[in-house]
Length: 402
Image 1: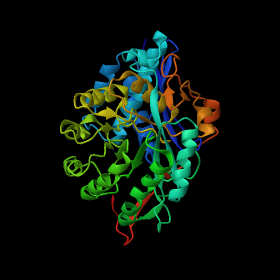
Image 2: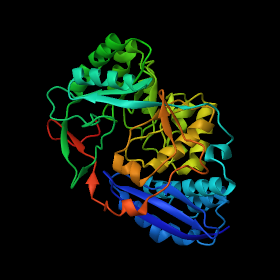
Image 3: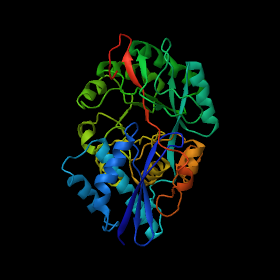
Image 4: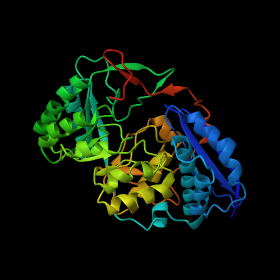
């Protein structure tokens, strides 16, 4: 079997997705997600202009060798664009191998380590009361774990607070919106939000919260300490992780479990965090973390340090990436939880898939390969639209990460 053609497909059924389709001379093709939110066309060009020509004629079964060729051979390694492109190729090759051997991808990864993948949904509201009510709706659907976000009083908008039920897309068409942010107001409201949720729904539901990199290390330590009475499953992205050493300070001030890594490109972004036991969950993704091949390396390193996985799973990952994550989740020994933001009906129609939700768990299904396809006839109805995530400024106009 040889690779004969590589297609880069861009569509926007509610949001932009970049999909890689790799064809072989035996008629078997594989899909990979290459979506990088707000920088989609950069990855599309990287794949089309630089990676695709290097794949023609290669044996798609040589997944590890092709991964090493694309990573080591580029010289300019790592970074989100490069690793997203490599991740798309890698995922497509696993899809091809599964289809060719007539088995689901998780069987190629060592088989199932569990019967299902625990997932969490996003409950949010413009007010704390709305957020508390939203948690109940998720529990009624069978979810066992819920992320809770609420608007901050006095601010016009709060990133991470959805605008719809079950799914929302934070990126907006046009140029980036600029929101106003107040860390002080945020820190004053979050503990009382979780006090209300626990009072309403008890101790059994797993509760999660995302700070979206907005805090300094000492502020993060304070928030984690203030949330300890409410026993969170995790507190996510409390501070920018470029300086891994900063998590020593955070860890020293709280026992609330910490999760980080959805923007990591390689395991090297987390080595100190893992080696010094500074986090509890690694959030790297199949699509931005170099594919299934590299994510298995990261998970194995995390496992040695008693850290579990908790892969990013927002709407900026297509059903192709979600399926790949589920096959990965099902197979590894140190899986923790999987984020699950549902896609729009239009997205699900463009990407028909075998994975299904039941009783708080997802399963990738037993279709050969990833169990996802791509409907060209529907995708063509949704052309690319430039869109960006919002950026934040402090109340005095300062551009800041927190």
